[in-house]
Image (cartoon, rainbow, N blue to C red; front, side, top):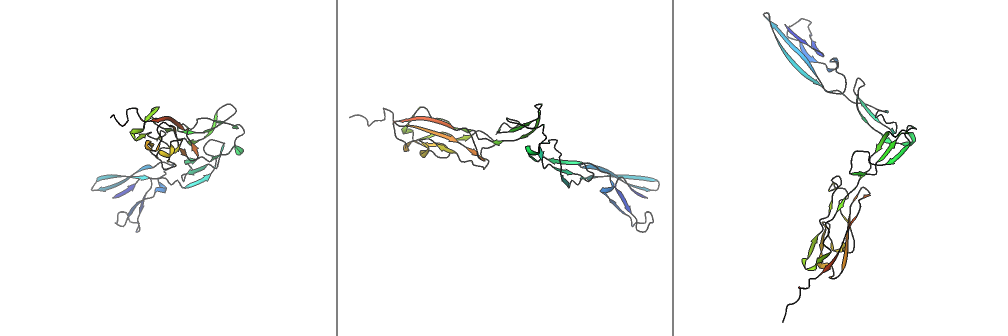
Length: 246
């Protein structure tokens, strides 16, 4: 005798004669009673009894929910956003919620104060807009943009012309904007800019001994500029760099 049991276990018997050999044992996830949005394990049992001895084998089936029903509805708990998209499982359980855009014209009247301050938990962004209720509680936060942090290694006040080059070691110290493929080229300025390459190496041979020069560095990310940094230095030929004596 074969018994196929458990939530969702289905036995199809075409000739309606038990254990005649034409039975088909399948699993119907719709009958398993799985709810919610998380994958659920269902245990099924195949029992075979022969000569008074029963052997049982447990088969575990993982049922993944179908979260395909979506609706545009308030779901993020923030009345200052509109166009939230809620994704639900077949039984109506919420699988996810994508907040909509902040729209002050459609916002809860109590959430009418905006303050530009850090509020998204990411110190690499600037210009966050915090939306506050009348009692000072936060209704929402619109994250600002990532701001580059230019870094330059300045030469000493006086640079030896005979050194040939000086490496300013240009860098963006913000890991969120450094080398991410968006506007990574440095913005070089100052009177020594014409003699400086993108890596920050100054060709001193292009400068005039006795002259005073400046070099500035900045970076831009999606229209957001960092705070420029600047160096000032003089180029000289040492007094002992003469033609010798007769």
